[in-house]
Image 1 (cartoon, one colour):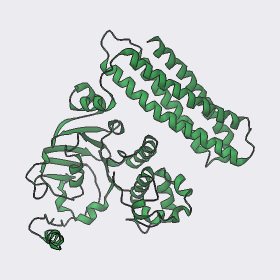
Image 2 (cartoon, one colour):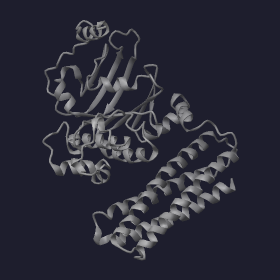
Image 3 (cartoon, rainbow, N blue to C red):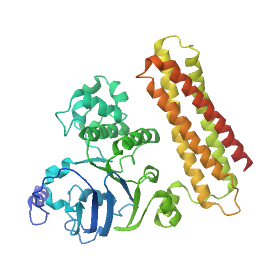
Image 4 (cartoon, rainbow, N blue to C red):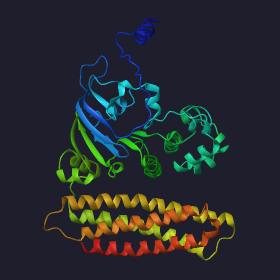
Length: 417
């Protein structure tokens, strides 16, 4: 009866089938120039199949490199090699020209932060989970990191706030909340090198939006390696590398790769829909989306008008109206992303004889983003600027009305088509 358990334990204790890494002697201090993958090949221990084959990648300091490709292409393996969870069987990874195997492992990993799809949280308080890895952090630093990660709002609503116990692996929290705690943890460490391994792939649309905002703040001015399944999350990356069966087959910006009409373009088409079956069906989709935006927008304008006219019965109701307006703005942002994808695909598939109105739609979609970002920013400022509350509400209302005018132009164009 004990045989299987003994075999598992014996296999675990064996040393001849496991790679024991040699610790380097150089203390890692900072990244000054770049990270390079030089002809890197890799196969997992006890496996003959090569997972990575002669991979060359270049990541300059302060930029973002996104890795995309189908499942099993080798994206996560590359992310595991950088902090030396494994070492390549051939080739090298260098930081400022020094092979990472020459660095002392602890100091190397302290310069990095990893946010993955599977976030490990402890059965401890929110505060201690955020401060994991930096136990000397002050309360102010923890609160600041939570705010930057879009986590402060939900934390403050927990029964004991930052002292709330979240259960084993964070069972008391939703997926989006767990990810925001992981991002707060990474922000608190203030890493030079950031690794994001499909950090938003398992989230719903609203949670993804909040987490993506936090990731954008986290990755700003850092050297970032992103592994992503959803191509919408990597379009702003400085470079995108496409992997296929362990090889890098394309490298470029989002626009450059779409123009190549190669692997990336096919992945993009698979995610955002194949070529439209008919112009009328595509038009119907845009009309439905515009109606949904108008419904959300009318509700938000109604909330803002009540606030401008001071028709709230008490301060609590006033705060509820502000919160409702903010939620409506976030929902509109999610819908605008869908419009961007639909318009992008329409331009990609249109022929020379196709209607030329779509460039106008691109400009209007950009104005949608500008108007909504302004509304969100003004409503966010209300928490810290109570003296200017009326001014910010009026500016948010003006932006909403401007959005409504742009929406009418958008609807006129799609109806003409």
